[in-house]
Every structure is written in structure tokens, then in C-alpha cells.
Image (cartoon, rainbow, N blue to C red; front, side, top):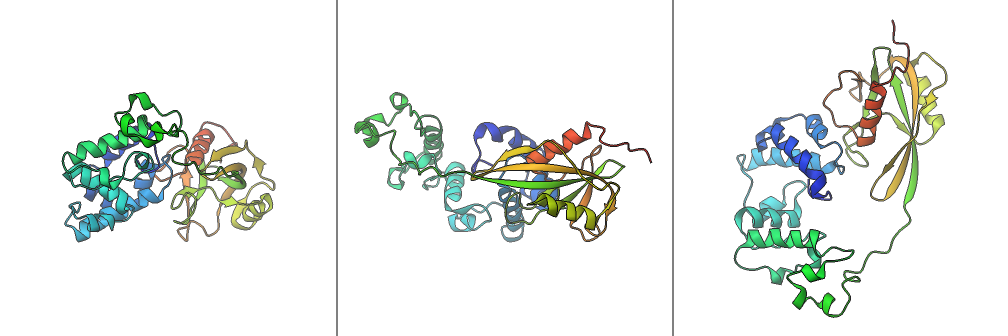
Length: 296
């Protein structure tokens, strides 16, 4: 969870996750949708899928015990060299460096001591996260100030050299909110690769005309023209997305659910499935509104 997510954001997710999955076997045997459900809102959902894959591998290849070999640990899905080093340093005191984005500023492998590895690793991560920060580093509070070349040469605001800013791309998407009179909305599972991989989402299209064609060709439509709802804005790492929901009342989908590509999500009794954060917010908002006369 701490890969690419700040501690303050992770803490409540971590508590809920451990309560439901207190051991490796619980993660491995859980449906992927339940794992994704408890991850919803943390982003980078490949991490959740890899966590479950790693749990399966640990059961199958390591008798349910996390391997203590660096090579075996780094080979698990979603771990790699840096995370494997952090795990072994913190849990077993193995002399391996942690090389996350914060720690690179203050750590080189030759600096790692031979004793008290766990304390050093945690300290170096905390130092990078709270003191040696990229903007306005707290040099006077830093225990390494005397030997810091960046401080000595007054270049602490330059090192490491920041990446050149790039213009953020803006994308637009049209999502179909197909609502049955029972109060269920049609969702599709997204491909595992790409944005929101493996999550359930409203059918998405790049143009309004493609969305309307889907409505007319796939759904049993009770009205001819979908009703646009208020646009949603969502920021990804490299681009901003504007979502225009198109609301339409329907009687069902002709093939999606039968082929396992879709499901009907009951707004009143929501299933425990993985949903992108903006879609979860939208569905919760829809549940509070009387969108149609739902009388039979």
C-alpha cells in the first residue's frame, strides 16, 4: 500500500484490510473482487491484484510462509528489489538498502550499516519523508547536515535535479448510466491492463455518439435520448479525466451479463466489488436520488 501512496492515506485502508485479511491464506482464497473492493480509492490497482497473486504463490510454493531469501522474495508479483530489501531489512535485519523515491536523496548502499539494520532502514525512510523533503528541506533538523554535500554547497534545493515538468494531458470520457426500474445499474469489468485495471466501471466511450450507439444496440431502452449528468473531474498521475455520465432508463442488456462481462449493481444493496473512486462516488450519489419513477 505504501508504494506510491502516502502514509496518512494508507492508515485507514491498512486497518480495514488487515481486519478482513489477517493472514496470507485469507488473501489468497478471497475473490479478487473483494480484495479490489477494500483497495478502492488507493489507486494503482495492479498492486492489489499482484498482492493476491503473491499470496497464491506463497501458499503454493512456500508453504504459506513469506520467503526470507532476497531472490525468492523479489520474484513475487509486485515486490521487486527495493521492496524486497525493505521487507528483509525491517523484518529480519538483513543488510539491504531501501531505494524508494524519498530515500534515494539520503541513502547509498555503502552507507547502510552492518548492525541495527531495521532501525536504520526505518529511520532513513522517515528522514526522506519528513526532513529531507524535496521542497523546503528542514536542514537544521537533519542529523546528517554536517556531512551533506548539498547543504555544504547550498544546492539542497537543486539536488536531485527535478524532472522537467510536462504539460498534463486532458482526456474526456462518456459513461453510460443504464438504470433499471429496480434501481440497478449496469457495470462492466475493465481489462486488467490500463487505467482502473480489473475494476468494475460504467460502460465507457470516447465520444457521445459511440455511447448512444451502445445504448441503442445493446440495451432495452425505454427512452430515446440519454440525460447528461453533471461532469466529474478525476486526476491521474499523468493526465486529467473529465467524465460525462449519460443517464438512460432501460429494461436490461442483451448479452453483457450472460457472457460474464457485466453485472447489475443494486444501488440500494451495493455488492462488495472493486470500483474506481469517482464511480463509487457517482453511484452513491445516484442511490440518494429519485432518478425515475420506479413503479412497475
